[in-house]
Length: 313
Image 1 (spheres, rainbow, N blue to C red):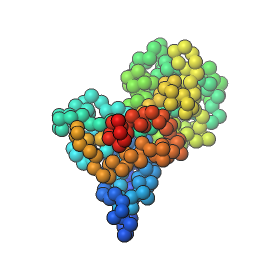
Image 2 (cartoon, rainbow, N blue to C red; image 1 turned 45 degrees about the horizontal axis):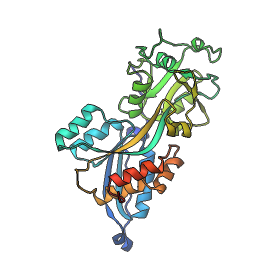
Image 3 (tube, rainbow, N blue to C red; image 1 turned 90 degrees about the horizontal axis):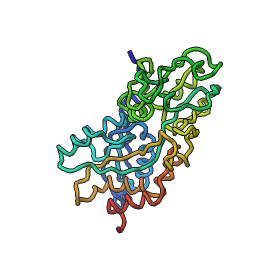
Image 4 (cartoon, rainbow, N blue to C red; image 1 turned 180 degrees about the horizontal axis):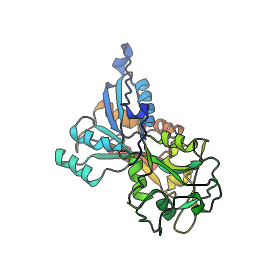
């Protein structure tokens, strides 16, 4: 059986409720904005919500960060207009929304991120190929390995000795889905992978065990762990640095998205518009960088602002 570790912070409902009242509120946009979705993006949503509340003192923001898989059902049910996701919607999730509303959800890319393979800070592992990564974490070996890798000695290391201890994300997270798709070539995880509800918990577990390896979001790196470069098909090592993530050179890079319930030809409600305007602004993208994610090029931001009607085409 897969072992599941639960964090009291992320397993519970994450609520940000910011409400300032006063005479100045009438000069600003007001309303309540509810979002449901990615826990990877929880810190971003929190900071954007705090900044929005300072700009518009009558604005109330409520954030439920229970995993990317929770966003599509909430959008389809109409309990939220905004669904943050660290992976694309699946075909089934997309179709369920279309079946309900007759139009597709609007996708807004808000930042770039990457999944990082991490080991204990004293682990000298120089790099990993995709087949090796698959052989470590999966039981199906779809990426080309001849068999599994379960001991550090199989990777040419004298230390650490013994078996490799595996840590990863739980199945409701977009991080889990992306790693399974890209690093395991769609295969199955080993049952011995310890699942955690957040990337911070994965990093903490790896930091405590010299025999451990795990995967987590780029912004959760700490000095207690070391990111492992990944080798591409030509054998070139690709480190998870911002420039490589922005260019798409790093193989486990990804877009972070907001899915929006916006009928064709209609405008966003005031609260949702104010939030997305902030996210796609220079101020919003500065928050992306502050939290360890990778900001978007201005050309991408401008194109999306035009598509949403925030600036002239």
